[in-house]
Length: 186
Length: 352
Image 1: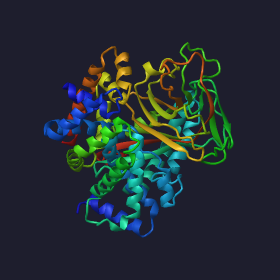
Image 2: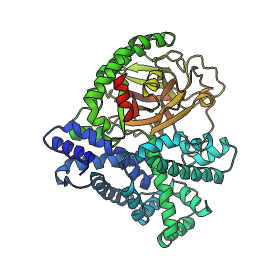
Image 3: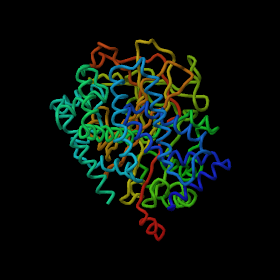
Image 4: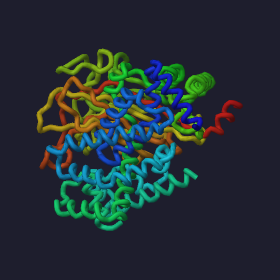
């Protein structure tokens, strides 16, 4: 067990003894990982954040069931996976075509998304913010704007380019971000 | 990037103009082609990470309730009080005097910072696996209980002064109770007194500018990240209408911006939203964002806004004059700064 896991175990034991407010430290530590995991399957960050909150509440209630030698992040993702399934199921009837598509993608690409999440080491997500700030101006604008709904079209107009070119710029930005995150890791 | 990946990303990010046959074909490719599936998974994972990392963690009021904690309790708030108080003292002075004030307070602030490091070392190191230290300083927690009402003259020209579009500070109103204390701000219109811009906007803004030079100096080459969050609520509004609560951070150099120059002058910006706002006056919704301050940042402009969404079929172009807001409220605005330093710098700092 490394120092980090020791810290977590100590923290969880103190929470179990009634120091409830320490749970916020646990939330703080795993929040970005969990929100990022959920946003990778839902894209709508507000929905991802709502589910992340539910996951943390469930985890809080079930903390006694977590085996101290286990991987807390993986345990949280397990709860998140179940919450996602319930979410997609409950949305099924009234979901739009786009939402049904997202749910299908999440189902089909689950293995790939899980593997990627399991391989993420501590600090990788924190590095992403730094890497975004290092992107060339044009790519940074594309990344800030995102690809949601009508944004690529609006951005294409701003940048006096085409919508496919905006997607291409974002694709290029994603490649640079992956490189930057990997370099920073080494 | 091949065309199918683009259509896939467009469909996945909510594109409504993707045909059913395209969706079906893409799902079939996903199911049958491992390389395509891996490629798509990689892209949507990156999009998710970008989304998550650019939007600060929300307040999660429900979780605080479930834990039996007040929303005022955060993992940094109990111990950063001293630093926060000192910084507030420093920052309540007008821009022209700020430098001198900061210098005279600096030793005290550093002492406060040392106290924060001492008390919070465990939680600060936590997220960084021993590679760096993080100090979190609360800049302000504003619930509009006392102090002057926000000015209604657009972008403020003084530090730490709320200003913006037409607004008023009020008690409970139209079934909406303040989230924190007895007062809250109601945003009234999307324009301000003496607005001369020829470009009307739909958004109603509350704006504040803060000086961040001390933090960048203290970071000494490390990272400085600013976080802004606010709570939004509205009296019941017609179903045909839809509103977002928006928080924005703009990193600026030395000059105070005007409304027109903001987009061009900013070194970087980030946006967070709660969308769409529900119609229940009993619930407050949170929006938050964070921004890694680029080198050269001297001030940050913080903006809290209501943004109406155009009804379907309505043009996206701005209205001729201004938008009036029937009952839209903001409360509990918080800003904090995280200073992240490599662990090696800690020893150096102790020796100074």
